[in-house]
Length: 325
Image (cartoon, rainbow, N blue to C red; front, top):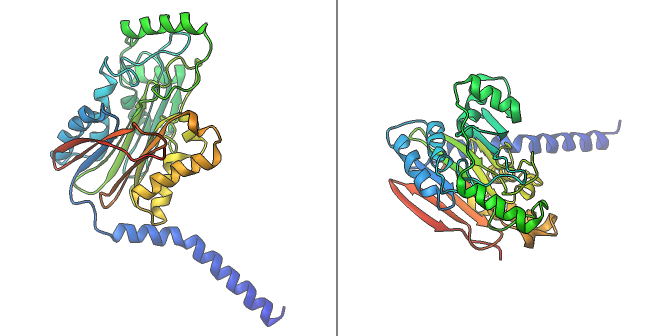
C-alpha cells in the first residue's frame, strides 16, 4: 500500500470517528451547560392549564418530574368536557372508546398502551407497563388484561354527549371513515423539569374521532408523540398522528436539539420537514413542543391556532404558538 493511500485511509477513519463521536460530545456540552433555573412544566392546548396546575403541585413539593407529568395529564383524562383525551373523548366509527398513552422518565425508561378500552387513566397503565414489565408497549385486550391485574377497574367511558355526537355523525357520514379534521386532534402532551433538573414526559389521547376501529396515532409511540433524553431535553407532538409518525417527530426534535439547535429552531425544523416530505400538509394541523435542559422552550405548528400552557415559578400561562401559515 502506498504512503498516500495509507494517509488517505487514515484521514477517512479519523473523520468517521469524529462524526460518530460528535453526538456524545454535543450531549456532554449540554450536560455541562447551566440547567434550568427551577421546576417548570409545558403542555399542549388550553386543557394544559389545569394539567399544569396539578403537575406544579408535585414539582413545588420537590417531587419527580415523572410523578408530575402523570398527575398532570390525569386531569384532562378524567374530565368529561375534554372531548379528545380520556373520559369525554369521542369514539371510533363503531362506537368504541379506545385510549392511547405513553410516558418516559429521566433514565430513558418508557411505557405505552394503545387501543385500551374501559380504563379511565391510560397514562397510569403506561407507567405500570414501564415499571412492572420488561416491555414498552401493550395494546388492546392485552393492555386491558394487564390493567385489571394491576388493580385498575373497568368503567364505561362513553359519555352521553359522545354517544349522541357519534349517532349524529353516523347519520351524516354513512359510516364512512373520517378524513383528518383540523379540529379533531387535541392530544395532551406534557414535559416537566423537576428541582433536580431531570426531565420526564407524558402523552395521552382518545385519538381521532370516528377513526377506524384499531387505529393508533402518534400519541403512544415513543419517538413520535413523545421523546425524552435527559442529557438534552424532551419533545411532544399534537395534530395528525400519521404525519408525526412518518418523520418520528418528537425524536427528530430532540436530536436537532442535541445537534445544537434551540428548542424553537428544532420545532420549526420538524414542521418544515413535514412540509418538504408530505405534499398534503395544507390539509391538516401538526404542532410540536420542546424543552431543553436549560429550561428553554419551543413551540411551532403548521397552522395558526395551536396553543400551549407554560408554568414557571407558579405562573401558568396559555400562549399562542408561532406557525408556518
